[in-house]
Image 1 (spheres, rainbow, N blue to C red):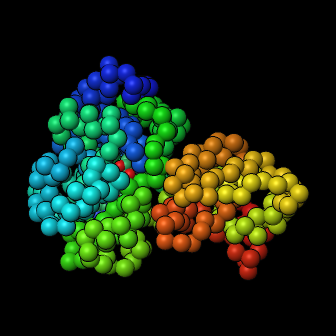
Image 2: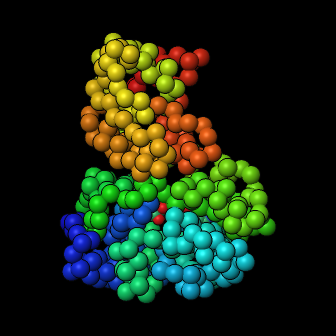
Length: 341
Ligand code: TXA
Ligand code: MG
């Protein structure tokens, strides 16, 4: 299959993406969080093609993207009272809600669960498409199963070229990390995945405390191993980066580093092959993290080292992704033990 590279700034290209989706195709679409791999949510055969393209096991549920709150009743059997308050504050935006599913929602989307995840995205081009399509779009992140999420069209193509009908290119995603997911199907709201909208902000709006598991409860498809670059990646406290670099360089390994600190050759000893600096500002860091990881992953390195992010609550989404994407170098195990096979 030839994957069409469409330009979101070109109305004809947007129309082509809509036509492909209407015909049951799979199209990678820009959102404000990460690129999604979309199919018509009312067409189970189309949705099944998402799983084939990604190599995602069946039973891993997908998010349904809708244009606005008024379409919820097509997908959801019961709308709990908290939804209006959250929607008023955070939709359109990076918030996904898990709700009791409408009987008509295909189990290909829900993975056989009796709940469905729904989000009203903020991305202008996508919103216009949703309006014209007048249906929901089922869309996971547009990466091969367990791979790094894409924040640019070229990341999508690097992973899925030839396996999808098209990618609609709208440049870099504004937020760069996946949406916050909250489960409202139980007695108490539960954070399933931390994201750009913080638990504190959500609790403030609902005036209700969440079940306090900080997204640790396993959800289907919410694996321990996830968001992995192909290159072995490790995170390390700042003071371990230099000794680890020394070790790897001695062994002739090609190393890339992602750090909020600027590279100083004198302080860090041997120079890594690549040193990419990210902002210490959380929003900018989150926006650029996947892109930076994709860049190092394409640089023919043996190891990627990522400086541990701050352990404060506002960094929870970044911490969550890095914990799944990397193993941690700990002094007691010694960095010698983490050499790739
Ligand atoms: O920002 C985002 O959320 C992006 C963009 C494209 O919207 N989408 C995204 O989708 O990150 P995905 O499939 O990569 O991650 C969705 C997560 C998965 O871990 C899935 O298991 C979980 O949501 N999920 C979906 N429906 C669920 C449900 N009914 N119950 C529990 N978890 C669910
Ligand atoms: Mg994903």
